[in-house]
Amino acid sequence: MLAFLTLAVCCIVIGLLLFVFWGNLKTFARSLYLVMAGFWLIVGVTAQFYWEDLRPLMNIPVDRTVAGVVFFILFSFNFIRWRMQRAAQRHDSEEHSPRRSRVVHREYDPTFDFSDTKPNDAKPPNGFKEGPPPV
Image 1 (tube, rainbow, N blue to C red):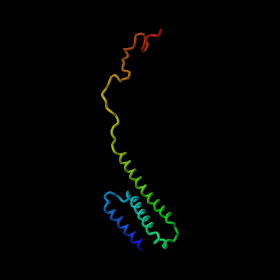
Image 2: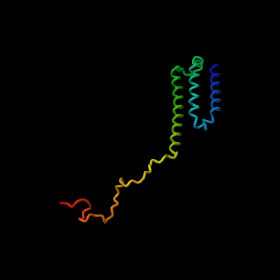
Image 3: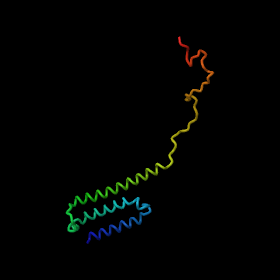
Image 4: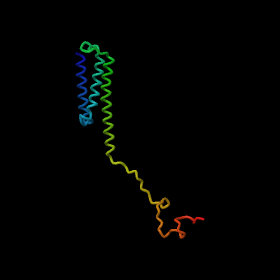
């Protein structure tokens, strides 16, 4: 009976925390993994704390360590999914934000102009394109 009372108190605490921090959670779909992670953490801690009281109610005999590992895996899965979802949202918001231009506008410097701007009249008189005539 005491275990069920503790679980009810934990659910009330989760409800109050959701009520207080609901503005930060924005939508329930975005925070579902966080809520589930908190739920599995509370259920796991409660099950470990009241293990001896819950043992007669078990239909399948399970070791305390195995149950703790299962609850920890469920908590970790939901918590990691929540963090990955937030990271993906942050990446998407950065991707759509305007980026700074990487082109640096500099003044024109004729010493670094390597384009061919010679007029056709400037050809050497010997018929060669450039340089001295062959010997």
